[in-house]
Image (cartoon, rainbow, N blue to C red; front, side, top):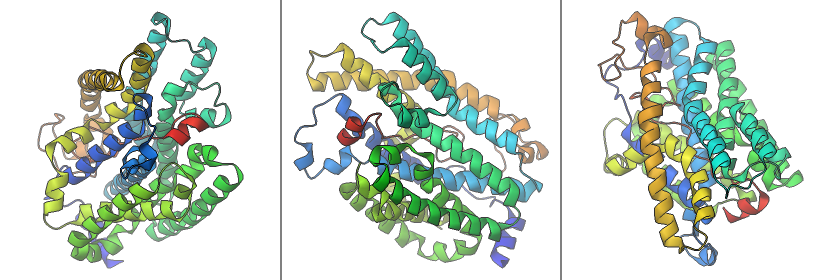
Length: 423
């Protein structure tokens, strides 16, 4: 309790870095795993099952767990930070901010898909089904539509199930923190009890309803965010202990994730004890990363600039790459798979650069206004994102905010049972 009270009084450390580059680097590695897990749309997969690196091509669920855990941790830390500094949580503002950050790319993608459907003669998907898919995506009920109507849902947009689950659980956590943010013990107990129930429920669903249903239910995919939220709430009690062992804990957690990546893919094991271990390893990595007292060789490797750049662009990469893969394949049926892959990656890179310039940067400027943060407004912090500012708790859905090391960017699950098996 003393540790928690001391952290409340101290607030964010003035010397805290504005961005944790190792988490950006892990984000970059994770988005590479997502792209590889969707690569079956571009290249042949025959023979991959018998290779030692097959885990690299089916690690989407591990990647999605990492981002759920990191997102849940930083979301909850940010919300608790607001409660500590202002005495209350502006739930409506918190929800709108995160909805805006996710929707900027998603809504742009839906608009492009509708335009392409009108102009592209090779886009033969039913127009009525496309309208249904578009409505369910923009209302963030897409994962439920995929589960209940897989034959009507547009397959090249199936990866967007992730943003739906993320926003649904985000709203839930915002409400819970609003109610119990000042009663940390009760909040901790609630999250721990819910995690036990969700873990048991996941196993039951995969046994009774099958893998496809388990992969798309909100209640079976929310465990990662709950684990991250639990770590954020528990941090005042565990920070000093973890800090002493952080330098050793981080590589051990990373090695565990690598081992699980090579052994756990798109199958029922993800909803058994292997999935629990993935969550625990991801939590251990995140907690070690945010408490590490000094840089290490591992943090230097994870901060390699290409990884960090990919991590910063991971939201745009995630949203745009999958439908582009499908569109390129549709137009290049007679091409060799290497040529098709190069073209698809080049087009994805072009769309990502344009989206970052025309979507992410204007949104960042708009959300940097003091109206969105009472602490920033009270401190009269300049609105320019490049201006020095008092360190704030990060917003986990902002891919460009310098205080934010994560965003929801991974979604390895495809849209039909056959696609799940391929992934």
